[in-house]
Length: 203
Image (cartoon, rainbow, N blue to C red; front, side, top):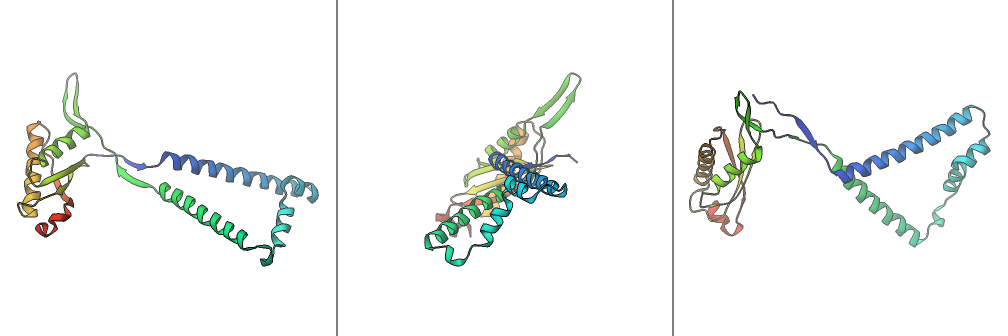
């Protein structure tokens, strides 16, 4: 059985922004942790408040009342909350791990002076071109996985039943692999899209 590495897809911009936010949060925690250490060593609270501004900020926020917020202030706070929710929600969504199998070159044979390998995209392209020879197939996208080629196809005008169309695409993809002297890997065909104008034909 072929072994493949499991990798995680990421977004470079989201990674940079998240790291900057983590650094800022870490600096804030370190700073106020240092203030706690200063208090533990009997530094006066006035000096700590001068350095951190914690007590002034707390007193100001604790003294706020509903009457201190007029309509425009409430709208500004609501707009800022929506913007932050959208930005941080989008950032969190982009940072979700998306594991996928990393593709590796397909080794054909080992020779005394080296090995013969085929890039994954070459195998996928051969299968796609083979499937596109089927008259009803309008689009094909292949991916070389662990031990097979998965082929997503789009169907236009269905002159044949859908099952026959997919079977023909599968046979032509396997024939294309054999024609290019590639290993006869299993080919899994999936109907991924179709022309909505011919929806009744597909049914």
